[in-house]
Image (cartoon, rainbow, N blue to C red):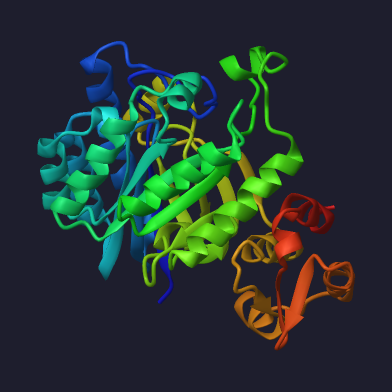
Length: 377
């Protein structure tokens, strides 16, 4: 039996960060949060039909800032999921945490609810960059949060870092990497700064001293070398993990397996259809009360589109894939034109072909977007 993932969206934050274009907002009051949670609990119940005859292997609470809301709501969400879905024996239950909104009381509630993986949005361990990003925490709070989780026995602790920040030097980046390793986390995710539309950063983009592609590439290589030396396995383009601490939930995405999205704007991929729920909180809540969610941005993937997306997503995994295993998983032959494109990238040095497995080379890691766009075109 294939297991599926569940993503739960909590759209609330203490403030909107200057680079963020996610579906998130500062709540008007506690009543708005309560109303949303009530709708979300209905959503869990109604969406359970999508998971019939399947087991849930991972639940991921993201946002927004899940740790911003009262811990009792997190407990209610997990309890309702357990009631409405069948979970595997050892499911991964993960939550995103902002250091400024964490307390020991919340941590204990998370633990009692069964949460066994946390992702701490540190982004940087230098105050000047946190202020620049508009983050609501400081480096000390981030380190305290990481220490607190370790003290309470959490073995799966992930930290997010951003590189290519305006004015960020290689030495600054090295300091952030060292701080993350020294904190004792078991997983590190790296993201290059992307300036998105409809953000404060986009409005002042011409004034920001952004790192160019060459510097970002150097920073990425530095992180790759440093983290591998510190016994982190580079298992996905942006992800490094200690042995056995890979993100089960993200592996569902990268293997193009099924997942159910719960909450405003959350995406699902089930039975060949990809769709989202309404991003508008009021509209989402109204649909929950009527017990009928409309599918937005709905797309039923053709066998060809499913193949292409599975291929480019699995290329993100450094282990790569074999054509034989890909054909078995998708129950279809790989078309010759796709094999020709793969071999073209092999000849150009972007993809390696070793023991009948295609995987990105060190050069290919830096040009993944170009490779992916070629397949989708």
